Structure formats: structure tokens, C-alpha cells
Image 1 (cartoon, helix red, strand yellow):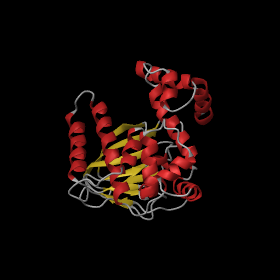
Image 2 (tube, helix red, strand yellow; image 1 turned 90 degrees about the vertical axis):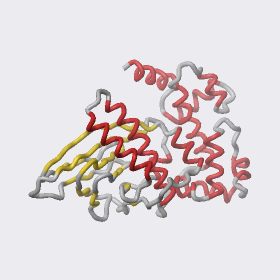
Image 3 (spheres, rainbow, N blue to C red; image 1 turned 180 degrees about the vertical axis):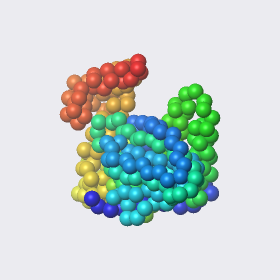
Image 4 (cartoon, rainbow, N blue to C red; image 1 turned 180 degrees about the horizontal axis):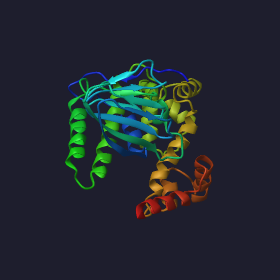
Length: 303
């Protein structure tokens, strides 16, 4: 396994600007954030987490701990208010720093699930592990972490629902800050740093139903077709037109969960000449037919 540095977010009084292309991607990410544990440890303790198929995160509500993982060059020392994220579910362990003491450490632990059946560029672009330091985070991040700890301590009925919504916002803040500040960028974040490719991504995200062609995308980037195709594929790891198709299918997955919108209307909105053509393409890319996505959405709503 290749080792990656953890990324520590820099200090700022105001949240850094975020590329519109990233905002639109986050809005269509179909990410589900679930709080799965509110843990309190005292004295010496050890928690071992195996590799998971979902992303993982831990927020330190109080106290301190060490995080160790093959994805890290060295252990991370976490303090109160720090957030560590392992977007790819890498195995890791957390342990007490107080072998013989009675110091208490509380953790809020959660999972990150991308529900889209198409490859999501955000999940591929994030590093194996990164941490948001409370002492270096902006006031919005700090306010959210304090609110989550308050909700846990309140004992309110339905607090898991509140925590899930707050954690979703916290993850979004962490991703935006990582994208804006980290210099060791790859994939999507490297593409967002390229003004020409970023402009194309924003256009695709905001207008997926446009009749995009290689020529129109290259013209938008003010590049030749060959240079644009090479640069886009180098940064995004997929050819431009394949990315357009994947994005349309991702948007379609979200729209299909709303039974008030017909499949024909979705096909037209995404630029397909017929409902049949859309259904064939959707099944080819996602592996299932649109009707199964719609049925799954209804089942979740009823449960």
C-alpha cells in the first residue's frame, strides 16, 4: 500500500473560497453521513478498526488520543475538537495517551457512504487520511463541532438525526477547506486548480443536458481538441465525454428518487433524444435499470 501524508488544514479567520465546480459536485454527490457511535473512554483503552467499504471519521469531543494506520507515515496525535477522516475506509486504530491515568476521551464516530452507482470523482480525489485541527480551523468549523458535542451531551430524543445533519455539513466544510488549502492535490482537486479544466467542469455540472461534444468542451477551455482531451484525462483519469456521461447518470440517480418526475422528463432534461435511449445508457453505465433506482428510493422512504 502506498503511504500518504495526512493533510492538516491551515488557519483562517474566514472559510476559503470554493470553486463553483466543487460546490455543484458536492450538491450532487449523493453522500450519506451516518453517526454510528458516541463513545466515552477513561484511562487506558484501544480501539481497532478493520478496513471498511465506506469512509470513516472520528471527532474528538474531549480529551486526546493517537490514531495509527498503514495510510499514515506516523501516528496522529488528536486533541479536543480535532476531526480525522479516512474517506476510503482504511484500517486504523485509536488508543489512549494515558496508560495509567484516569483522563476521559470522548469520540463521535461516523461513516461516509456514496450512494451513487457511478464512480464519484470526489471519493477518488481525497487522500487516505486527513485531519482538521481545531486550533487551526475557522470559526464555522469550531461552532459545528461544539454544537455536535452539545447535542450528544443533551440526551435529546432524535439526536442521531440532528448529528447526521451536522456531520454532513462538517464533512462538506472539511472537503472544501482541503480543496482550497492543500498543495498535494490529485484528481478532481488538481483539475479544480487548473482554470481551464475547472471552467469545463463547472459547465458540465451546471448544464448536464447540454449537447456537449469534444469540440464544444475544448472550445470552452480555449484549447485544441487533442490538448484538451489529454489534459482532462490526465487530471480526471477519464476521457471528457465519459465524464459527461457519468455525471449525467449520477444526476439521473438523484432525480429518479423523486417519483413525481417521470423517466421521460429526466431523459429530456439530461439531453437524451428518447426515453428508450436514456434507459439503455443508464443501465449500461450503472448496471441496473432506472426502475430499480426508483423502487429503491420508495423502499427507503417507507422504512
